[in-house]
Image (tube, rainbow, N blue to C red; front, top):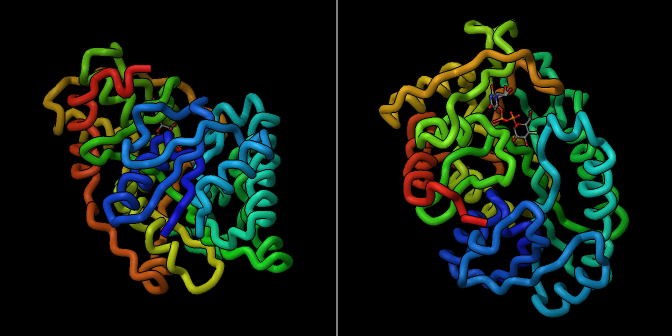
Length: 323
Ligand code: UFG
């Protein structure tokens, strides 16, 4: 298929583009390089530099790439930042996303795979979180993604747009070539690995008084390659759907740091800090629906395998993409 990967220079988009290219798809990447990196774009892809604020740029990208489907990864995606600057999240994730949908409609592109998040749920009533769980986000990031899912539903009903929305839990790990390099790194695993690389003195633990066995937050870490495979399956989905995507396992912040110590063989000092605003205590996915309906099977179930792949990539590229 011909696919336009919007946000294809970012962490998740770059690895999805790589897998799609490995499978013989024709890929164009549309990205403004604000969060993404030029060197994260697979050289086999056509790169179109542009911004979702700019409707004309999207129109011309669609005219050049002539995609049969769009994958939409371009978003602001930090819970803590969204608690300080909600406007950025509503603008980038809703208004700019609408530009993309309207341009798709005008160009008769009728299929989209959308990057959503477990942050749409807020603190869960029961675990694991399946697709019937109430959606009550506790941060503007989750609210913006939830709003966009609702918009997709209406565009399907009114314009016939077929969508699959994938609610990622915690994406982590790397492929051999592409990995996680944010200009401002807020995520736990890369921060712990930067300590192992000697680039940071310690990793901070945000909150040690949660109602969890060791007092730190529990998350469901999913290997980025498994996540990317779900996108490829979503391209063939028969109808519009929403799917949660995780492994069904949970690891606390302390457990993640312990696993990083074991895999890297480094000490990794920690400093305990207060809770980070907007963080729910526990998030664990039920992915039964995507397993049953699209036949998705995660291949990397263990946290160790995820961290090992990330560690390999960080050792190979200690300064990430270098920009
Ligand atoms: N954490 C630390 N120290 C750090 C970084 C993170 O203790 O240096 C903690 C966080 O407080 C949280 C856990 O580690 O409890 C995981 O944090 P990340 O920043 O790695 O990931 P998040 O769970 O905040 O974010 C992920 C996705 C978001 C999504 C969110 C839902 O990256 O897109 O889950 O809560 F919205």
